[in-house]
Length: 495
Image 1 (cartoon, rainbow, N blue to C red):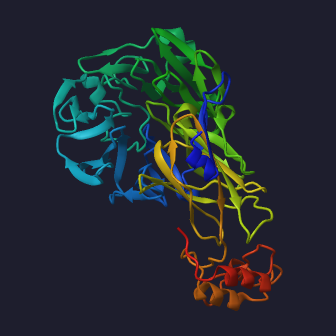
Image 2: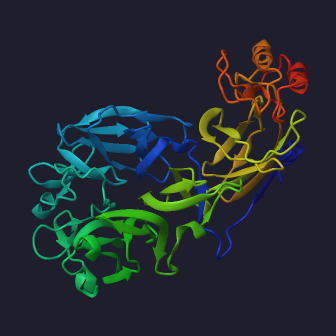
Image 3: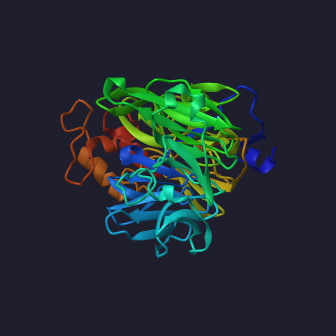
């Protein structure tokens, strides 16, 4: 153990995952119910999705709780890769753009209409015929003209959510417009057949989704019929063998480079599929509930994963989940071996009672730069924890209700490490300006003698704050004890 860290109340240990241990760690985005859905995710945890009703919102994993919006409501994001490039296509105007999320630069793509993007910065681009072009317009081959006619791939059609991907060999699973096969695996210069005859229920069906990884392992969904007679067939293709993934009302949502497939079970009503329970599948463990493979925060809140929204090649998974049965939002799953476990302990002379479900703000800095925002929730004893996907020399700036921000000494964080620290918080900051001042005193004065049984406890006062905000010791009343906290910490500033 590093002695300097131990002296600061920080413990460090490095370990490895045991057999049968969970595969993923859940990471809260810190955006709450703002996230309406995630369309694409990369290995870093960047994502493109809908935030606050904006469909072309981009979140970068290493710059804190911020997102960027490409102001073109009619555009659709058709890809986001590990190099932090995204492609967008306006289906109405035909204008295509490349968004460099790393440099935060937006430029017009003039070489045609791109639909899918791989990690080599190559895209399927529709001109007079479909080609594999990089973002500079260099041609890496031409696809079969049948791909141009695919209503599930051609961006002249108004299907806004991509249901396939492009691997590093330029391969894509797409609908066939010629012949009776539901679809083919297309690559520059040709197409290869999928042995649909190995699954009887696939005959006469239509490809609904299709994904192929960099090891040429593919998976997807075929649909046949409608209404009560509709059948949904989930399939997995490896080394020429086509296997059916068990399930009735089922969907397939992605595949990673280990060959793990992700999807959801649900129910069909009036030709609309509603996901209820997410799953993962591989040839070793078969199909199993994804929730059982995830380490969730130990904070007393209930998170139920209902759907998989996007999968990166390296196994970062965007999921939809129900939070405490109150609202639905999106979060990320990282392979647990790509995260570190961080545990904090809250202490305070100003509040020593039940910390249960206090929201803890953790601002993460790397080498002095703000890179992420985590929002774990505390247990009754003040313990909070999260799984951190960022590595490096990290420093945590911790605060919670009414406390000044407190910096934890820098920690060298690496994957599979365990880090434990304590933080002593100072109370009295009602107006959240990271200081205890006369402004906090004035708010408390306006709320003095208020209690949680008063009808105006949750009604804003003329100063813009609720009486509840001045309850610094959280006993349900604004009293002399709250004033004593401000008096003791007056003129103090946070880190």
